Image (tube, rainbow, N blue to C red; front, side):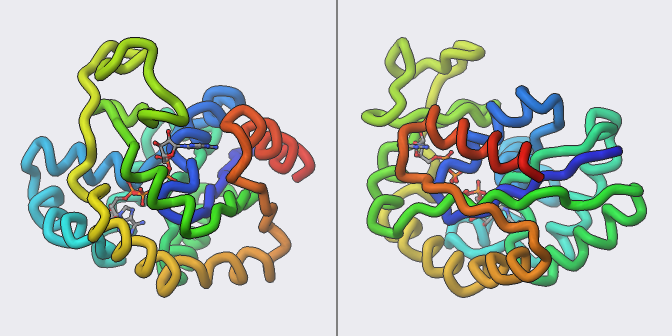
Length: 216
Ligand code: ADP
Ligand code: ADP
């Protein structure tokens, strides 16, 4: 049986950080919609060119484009056992589309951990975030790499994301509250939501997430 986990939470909640560990531990693929968009931006693909303006403004890329991208990603061989979805769905239309896609793949969303972090904490997290091209995430104070400026996992150079500057962060949090937070109720109504306190230390959040997923 394939297992799909949807990680919900605002920008900066720790979805990318946690998805990396949880997907490893559960032997599932890690699908980050933001990472796929950034990869396309870097390679200057048509998809990347289309997404760029929205991403720079801190707005969502249109649903049809995003849904098509994830549909393709979910059919790749590394998703045979399922996947941890990080950053998708982000709108009710995307959530409905996901249900349809998983039906076709004979799967279903098993659990939706919601990493709850208040807005005032998010700004400090995002302004100190450093990332490598492979999507490994650090924080200058809360989770520094062993060697300054280099990824612990692959040695790649770390960079700060263009959209992590304060004005864009504010816009992204607003967009989250308007367009993505309705998914909390959507999944609560379906009995899938599991709330986790995302202000705890990274390891404790991981432990709580795994416990929540295991409970089903
Ligand atoms: P998201 O994918 O939800 O946007 P990230 O995983 O990229 O979030 O984390 C955002 C920033 O916060 C990163 O710099 C990361 O190192 C840091 N971070 C993640 N989890 C925690 C935590 N529990 N406590 C403190 N900082 C954290
Ligand atoms: P964070 O978790 O820090 O908010 P992401 O890396 O998930 O950031 O996303 C970065 C940007 O990529 C978003 O601000 C948005 O422009 C675009 N994006 C990512 N996922 C989606 C999605 N599911 N729907 C629409 N746009 C998305």
